[in-house]
Image 1: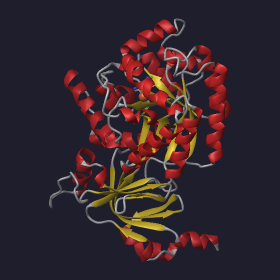
Image 2 (image 1 turned 180 degrees about the horizontal axis):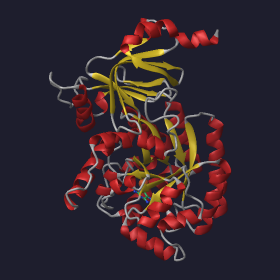
Image 3 (image 1 turned 90 degrees about the vertical axis):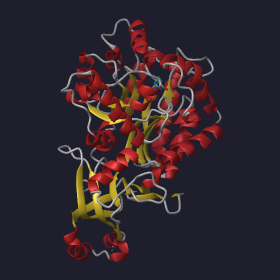
Image 4 (image 1 turned 180 degrees about the vertical axis):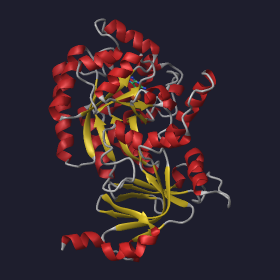
Length: 452
Ligand code: GUN
Ligand code: FE
């Protein structure tokens, strides 16, 4: 009985699909029919099988969405590193380098999130902005505040996004008005936060242990956070090797450590559920350690250029076998859009190619597309659930319309489906994202601008 009801609820999409696999950065599948049942992809077959699938699954034309020639479906975008609490500064305050930028602009802004009304105001806008831009999964930094971070988890849950939510930990080298006062307090609040997020009981929203970075966290705090993450089986996120002054400072602060990476490794903060942002200034030994521990790297090209941290050679990281995804790193980066992250990753790679010898392997637009989808899913250790359109994965997807009214994409009659996809990647924006699905639920529809 229940199976029959579920079958009549099946949503079916007919048209072109594009996604990435292990073997191919972009696979284009025109003329396909996909069935989504509850949260998951049930089947994906050639359009010729439509009648036979109707009979087998018992769905009718009323369950089918026929895409137009200007439309295609792609996996939801995965933002592996974003500071929800820095959105008030998006597009301002990029004149100082990282360490001065933190003290002058970022810590004072984050301190405002002791005000829970302000937290709700900002976080609601952040999650809506990301969903409109097709980010179906995000790894968020909140602030040190317990109540504010709970609000971020609530807002994400209410709006239906998939996310890892971090309450930030920091207690030195930051203002007295914006720091945790003791390791005990830090761990107690973080444990309460973890428990709170678990009480939401959503498979979409999970806590992530978030030591800001080594300079703001003494050894005993880092070690306790490593234990806490192990106790709850949590993800972990932080910053690593973002700027040269930061790396030199870490050497002074942790004179016993073999490297910056070794600081985190010694504190048991590196696992296949760890995400390290930036990773620009790393030695080969550090890359080996990250690889051995299964750590994912969040490449944040907009931020790395905007506050001039460096040019991250992601080709080097990828060829050493690291998992790499893309992050917007707002507000170090000024754009909340993962399409922007894709483009900036390509431009950084182009600049590196100009600097290096002729056979430097630039990133291709196809690879950048994979970094933003399947790559991100791997970095967040979620590739068994999301990242592409494999059968049985959760349906996190975007319906793209390159011919949407007012769109910035120029489409002509001779354009192929591959042209349309590439033009979307380079010149598309939220106006072309007609629908957003997370775990099979349509949570945004451009036609009524609704976030459900
Ligand atoms: N390193 C420590 N904190 C931060 C932050 O908020 N943004 C960036 N980009 N780097 C950091
Ligand atoms: Fe960051």
